[in-house]
Length: 335
Image (tube, rainbow, N blue to C red):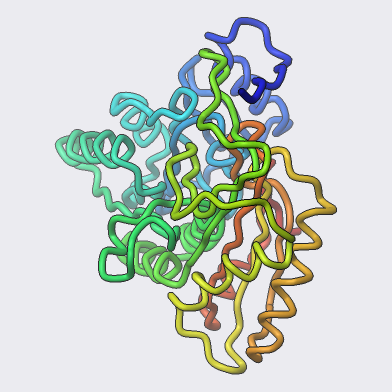
């Protein structure tokens, strides 16, 4: 049986509280924790803007709470490790961040998040606040194209936040921000692979079991089952498998532009990710696809899970504009 890695903690029951305190401090005054609640909010929110509220379970840092900042999320409602934020937390976050032009909820497509954000939306509507919801569903392994609404949100969340955050910073209406966010999500495809599981701090248990010579293709961000377990193979062969599924699911012609993300699931080295990026770029070059932007790094993790995901976002001029706007957050910055 695989060993659970050591973690440098105080009380495992307080990891979210202490982590959010540290994250707020890491923003050097640009972000604050709201009244001791599991909510992070910008301190520089301008008046009269559309609000982008993001959120989800902790344990996936830096997503979601690490992506609050200028032209990113305006606030984040945070749950416990691998658990959705409560409806009360979401409502409190939205009320604190609302600046009079409505609120867009943007989060990954998981049952617990869907239920709690929907409850919060109803409560906010009773208070006269216009709320719209966009769920990220970029994981091509989770369901076939005809059931795309059932797909999970994985690292595509980051590009969706970046685009929607830029739109919320520039656009005057909630309708327009919602339209752009939906367009961004519709152009996202991702898939991941794990070679070792992560663990849950409070229980000390692994999220799933893998033999030493096995990998899990297409698993979810909490260790949900993928499409196959298989024997360990080369980096190029793994990249080929993931890209075959991604490219079969999105229409990319010669000369089309994309943003490309190679995301570390927690314990994968930069060396390994760059080797994957090398192969992915070869595949895209052979198709005549233009890579407008490459992001290689740690964006959505599953604690210390070893593995990576690949995200492709098909671009047009509008999406490029919002993706490339200057932004500042702990998890991602465009300067």
